[in-house]
Structures are given as C-alpha cells and as structure tokens.
Image (cartoon, rainbow, N blue to C red; front, side, top):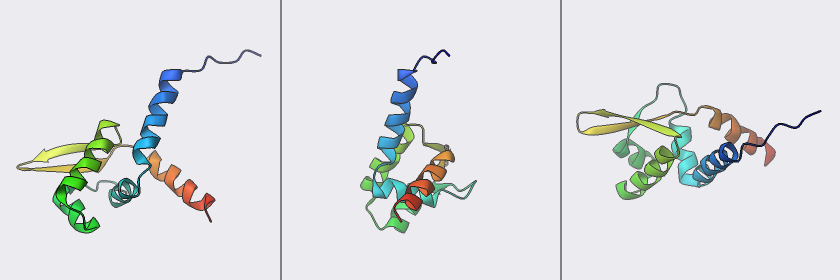
Length: 99
C-alpha cells in the first residue's frame, strides 16, 4: 500500500488558520457571524464585544488575512462575514472535548 505524499503547504495553511482562531475575542467574532448570511460592521462588532474599535479592527484583519472572514463595502462601512463555516464545527468539537 502506497502512502500519499504529505502536502506540507496544505498543512501549514491549516495550522495558520487554527493559530488565527486561537484567541478568545476572535472566537467570539466567529460565533457572532455564525448564522449564515450574517454581516456585521466593525462598529457593530466592537459594540457587542465591548472593545475599542482599534482592537476589533486588529482581530478582524487577522481573521480576514487568513481567509476566515470576507468583507463587503457598503458605502462608508465594511461588513464582515464568515467564509469558513467548517470552523464552527471545529470550535463545537473542541468545546465538547473540554467538558
């Protein structure tokens, strides 16, 4: 039986996505964007999480740079949405494992 060649680039990409998610505020942002079709602005996110806009923007940029979030400009606002719904399944699995 032949082993498949390990795709290091694919594994590195997956590890980087998991590292990006590995922060309580980023997990909270992902959970807020969980319902399909949900799009929130930085102001809506920072208000709900009670953090300053600079902090929210920092975390949103990390999630967007890793391909976890997408964004759409609407006038002066940018609305963020979840691109990778599979992350919710991973987070749910991790939560179940900690109980």
